[in-house]
Length: 310
Image (cartoon, rainbow, N blue to C red):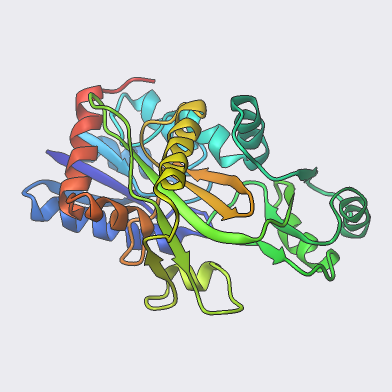
């Protein structure tokens, strides 16, 4: 099987993408497949036509690689590809739209407020305090890897973090701060099989810290633990992850993030979870006896069987 592994692009998460892509390509090569890393730039179409891959494995994080843009291009080129289609990627990347669908599905979410792109940070801060108070989480609308995200569990200045998040250009989602454990649950949904939730993982970082960009991607700065939660609650989290995956119309793989404390809330769903040495999704698969090579091969073969559907 000849696989083109897409990497890089113009996203602020391009370096993480390249790390993930290198791991995916190496794993596929170790299982006897031809896997070439293809950088996402203005020459992407020419490179793909020259390579003539059997399947494309987008290992991209953030727009334009995870928001449906690249997926639309691949569909137009008639190339089978791993991961969700245009619609699923687009709605999952937009945190406000995704939460609207979660609410319609009856999934638990935190109260939030949408701040439009171009808003004045001082005016936005006053609006947030009036609606949600000062104990909030501020996040760019369409970014991942905690880029531009600021948690304010004890309140404080809202203007500076709002200005930082607005600088990404797509608006900002502000959510009521919910105290609890950071929990993640992956879904493996290979074409032709039954979607299944992966084991529940708790993310632990040093006291007084949170799961920011540095703690996500620096080895040793976070731990992936089996959470000390009752079996019934673990099952409920897995069911919530499956429901979130389905209500967004996703396929192949996803990872739902939660806060679990006195209440449980769904934060967001990642359509292309990281595949770096510190990533959560491969860790969860290993707990089911699916090593990294098997995972990448199953996903690529499933996409090949599905074919180039729009």
